Amino acid sequence: MASIDISDVRKSYGRTAVLHGVDLNIEDGEFVVLVGPSGCGKSTLLRMIAGLEEISSGDIAIAGRRVNDLAPKDRDIAMVFQSYALYPHMSVADNMSYSLRLRRQPRETIKSVVGGAATKLGLNPLLERRPRALSGGQRQRVAMGRAIVREPKAFLFDEPLSNLDARLREQMRAEIKQLHKNIGATSIYVTHDQIEAMTLADRIVAMNGGIVQQVGSPLDLYDRPVNRFVAGFIGSPGMNFLEGQLRLKETGPVLALDRDVEVALPVRPGMEDGSVMTLGIRPEHVARSAASAAVTAETQLIEPTGFGIIVHLNVGGQDLKMFTQDRAALQFQGEITVSLPSDHLHFFDDAGDRV
Figure 1 (cartoon, rainbow, N blue to C red):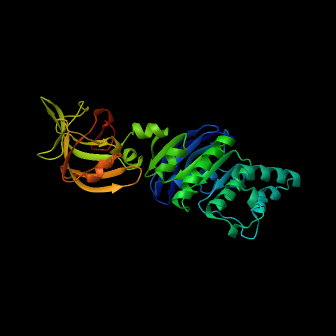
Figure 2 (cartoon, helix red, strand yellow):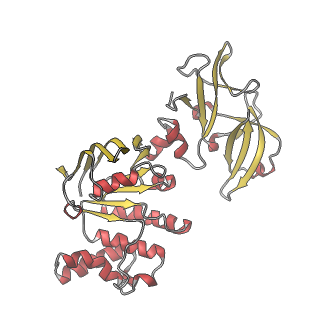
Figure 3 (cartoon, rainbow, N blue to C red):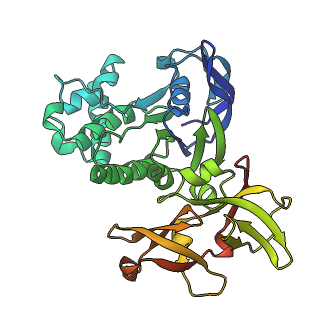
């Protein structure tokens, strides 16, 4: 296995720049997830690491070796795509062993390596089947097995689960995580699904507009997002944002949402009186309260999810979601009062950066 070092990597198509100087160091054996909305540049970066896209400027090194000018086959990486790309006329065993046969590996070696990968992925009963006789999840396992048998320096995953239904995605996430635990391979995984990012990653790289916004552990990004983009992208349901003006009163700082609605702030943000700012709080931290400092909200919509209940509220003309497991919330209607606990508040300035 190997480390991967990305230094000031940029990519442009003509005059259109899609990556704006990416710096990232991935340690040997680490599982890193690139996450962000469609068009943020995450798949482009992955394809540049694989050698499927040219680098406009900057450097990529795998195991300390600069690979900018190396062909994909010479980079010693294996890629698992969104489409399974299996040979329909070949059996599972032949699909998995194809790269080894091209290298003219001994027959016994091929049998041993394919058997080992099949055992890890639960494919032994399927080795003689052809792809048309497999489910979507089984085909994705075969595609992963085809990558594993090559014993590459790194694995690259480009949204491999997006074609599967929700239950299969959940199952495959667990299998990929267990596989990484067993093999310990350096892995880079691209997804737009923040749940996949949170559950799989050692570290998450949040991207937007071709720029790395934040790099850290899943809980780093969840608990201390560096800006409003990361705060809103990580977490489900997404973080609430209440926009207003900071007012410094004798009784303490408040966020004025409109003329009549103010939210008391536990601390004074490092901003001037009258500054435009945004208060963020996650739905699971909003709670019903009868305390004098509670905020009055109007019930708009109630969504039971089974695991919990999402209550859509209106505060000063702005949306506020509350997530609770208390089924009494199914009966909420009209005005209720909610608390916004001080230790779960996030503050962002008018540029969207964390205060």
